[in-house]
Amino acid sequence: MLYCEKCNVKISGQRGECPLCQNVLRQSDDADEEIYPVVPTTLNTYKLYFKILLFVTIVGVVSSIAVNILLPKTGAWSSFVSLGGIYIWVAVWVGIQKRQNIVKNIFYQSVMILIAAILLDLFFLHNNWSLNYILPCLCIGMMTAVTILAKVMNLPISQYVTYLILICLFSIIPSILIITGLVTVYYPSVICVGVSIISLSALFIFQGGNIIAELKRRLHL
Image (cartoon, rainbow, N blue to C red; front, side, top):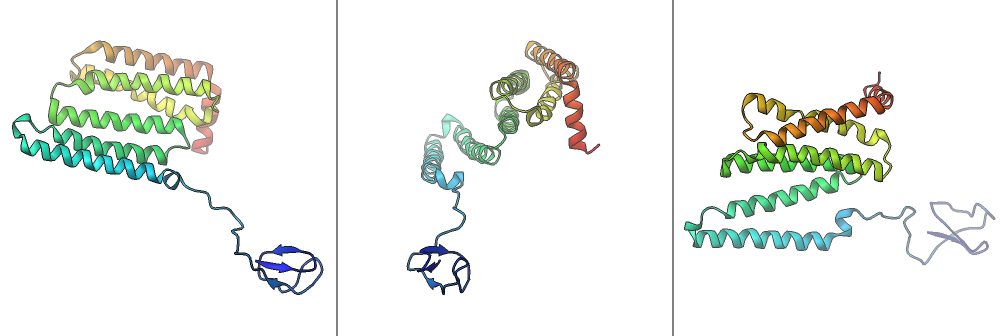
């Protein structure tokens, strides 16, 4: 940082003379200051908490595996703990990456929960609970959460309408599962499909013009 003794001002850059009085500038004794402040990221702000969480996760996973090895007759329950630890960190990473758009964050987190539930059901439980209950409940939960957040936070329609339509269309999947016989408990899926159709109808009836305008903007039509 340069300094003008006559004007008593500090000047940044590589000038040789003061722009105010043309006096010769000298180097200031103060340390150079950043013109633009360094904005800490979420990771840097909560660095200690992330380290603690990582340490606790590692301790939990290693301890569960060790106990499971010592007690093999209790089943492979340590795999649940290990997968849970991995899921926690993936969810945290997605949450940080999508923190600027809470609607998108809800959608991504819900899809991750569904994938985890299906994998858990497929490889360990084998009772189809992920399709019977988790899928329809998640869809209803997503539609409800996005609708409430949009009203409470007064979000612009451009910020949530695309994901709300995707969620509603996604919520029709249980009807396909019913037809194909992959779902054995009908009432959660029937409720989910009904809520989805009602939500889509309400969107296009009350916000049809805004939706079409937003789709044209996004598709550059």
